[in-house]
Length: 308
Image 1 (tube, rainbow, N blue to C red):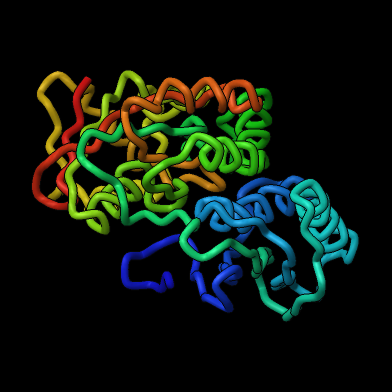
Image 2: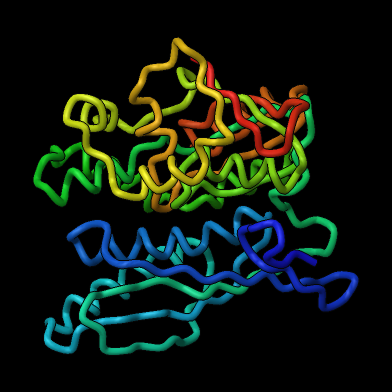
């Protein structure tokens, strides 16, 4: 029912009129030094693709690359972090596979279920929709700064807690209110994932930069210290031909709008008349940073306008 043609978050395969399987996989090297938090963030990131489809995750398989000369306690802590997030999500880790590799890598292959026809995709955004983002941006900037010992401990810990937060509550709120399209914001940054949604839906979009939530400390690190991960510049090179920046935008705004996120929030497209209800529902469920950041508009597919 959903494959890779539109670059969607997960595959959806119909089993019967009442049941479809939803499958995804994701893993990456450490983004933080603490092995427990690394495992928790990676698991939350892997589960996010299931939540973005409106499905319920059921089982997961660990995917592990680990150097045989590192202490096994580090591996135990990584798996413990992943298991804690899986348990929070109500997901059973039923096995996995481990290989020897020079650099640690960890993630999950996740299977979920959804009723056919009720799945969310990135391909149904409609002109007149509001765009809601459920987590602040900046994790790429902050974790890059941390690798250079330039991020305050409090700034880094707050970013870690954002990354480790499941998108479960956000997905449940979206399903309750009813939305047209959904994706999660990860490695391509907000503008990259929005362009993917707009392209798949055959629409254009507008983003109001001043409305976009930013993690504490990220703007200072990005602008004053000019810290950005390499992925930011790759995202900009690949996508900026489709983005129109209004003249009053801060010249460094791209550093946050293209910032590659780890376990970022959901980007939700829904009728404008429902936007206030969804924001209220998200806040009631503890998704405190959720806010309207833009709109879907008529125009060339995947064309994005960024205004102040």
